[in-house]
Length: 620
Image 1 (cartoon, one colour):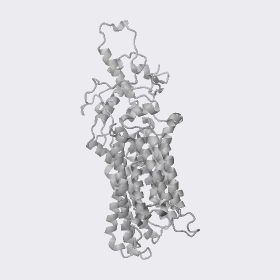
Image 2 (cartoon, helix red, strand yellow):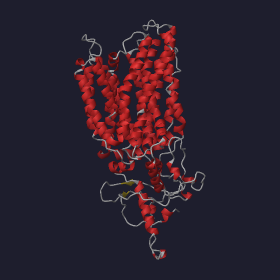
Image 3 (cartoon, one colour):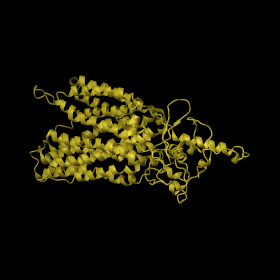
């Protein structure tokens, strides 16, 4: 029995404001020690440090948890954090790479199969299919990470992305299959992998990050989307330049002969297939991460280990805080005939019990609703891309080589002018200004500028539209596009952090799908019928998007501010769950009080006292 279990507990209340005190149990565990092997967890220190193993010699799991989290918070920003950003950000790099690559790839394959005029329905299907898979992946992987654990799931989604990328670039045509159907299937599968990366990378980065720079680190992970777009643009330029001699003679789809079609076919396959390379480089590091200290002890609580190991196991933890400022906590201990351990894992029933209460559900509504609104804005900006490229003379050429080259260069210019600065201004200010102010400010700016574009569209010159486009891209990323990713990874309890993030992210993709399939078709509403130019309804669609941005302002008021708060403080404040680390700190105080107590007391004369663990965590 450990020293913690031998210590008696005095007093009926738990002081919620107890400070973390130093403890005598902070001796670092030597790597070759086998005495505490039952407390060791799997996973190396390649990308994420295994903080739990640093304190495996401490038998009490709550104290071990407290020390591990203390060490995480004390870790200075360095190479370990840079590796974390790179490994966790690979999924978002691949996601944005694929979006850019398939847009250009569709133009390339249109010359192979449709003489340069791919049907609009086919183009929309190929673009939307990835988003459909992403919704499935976000919800399924998000729930799985809460049930099975972060470590068991992380890396699986990357394997799916890698395999799907390779399969996409190897399919061909045959009488018995439909090329578009098979490609759509693989894109859905790839979307499932990409979707799984959203909740996993967010919560793992959140749970391993120091409180001081958690927002910046999570923002930097998400900012890999910009680098993915830039990488796709560079790869596209290289591919187009490499095949210049085979395609530059063709000034239309009909002039694209066998040599030209072969070149275009190889170009899109190389472009799409290259998306598997970043994932391959990061796969090993993801498969070898340690389990999150918070998940390992908040959810798993080491209850799978046998009781005979001699460690002080925490039995049947179901800690709830009543939310009152009376410095007391309520412990709900399920009684039973025997002290069998009950693993407090996530369950569907408990999820509905928790989020069935408005004070908790409104947070999920705020994160999911805000993400839904901002993804609609993202698609709204893409509707203007063709007009913007025309304004800067990077669109309109009929020559195949010139058209593909200009599309690559023009999009790179727009990304570097608006998206990239917006991402990194968010990273620089996230832990200074705060998540909620940045999100509300971003929605306000987008509402204003979408209104300007919509109501004054025909009065704005092309160069003016370019400026407005860059401003909207900037405030989308220095605003809700980044914060809607960060906040769900922080503001929910550990046992439902991944599920809630997955639901929030899936809401965003549903918004993008609706915008792309429904609102996107409105830009040509009755244009041909009324003898008007193409995209005649675009100004009105921008006005509709402005309305969604206005709604996003109000949904943003439902989210909590999480800046410079530990994840435990956030759960305690917004979900009424007590911080387990405070229990460990309380124990330390009691141990020190006992050690300094009078030695003249005869133990046999005292009634036998229950230990803290027996009093609160064992069945009577």
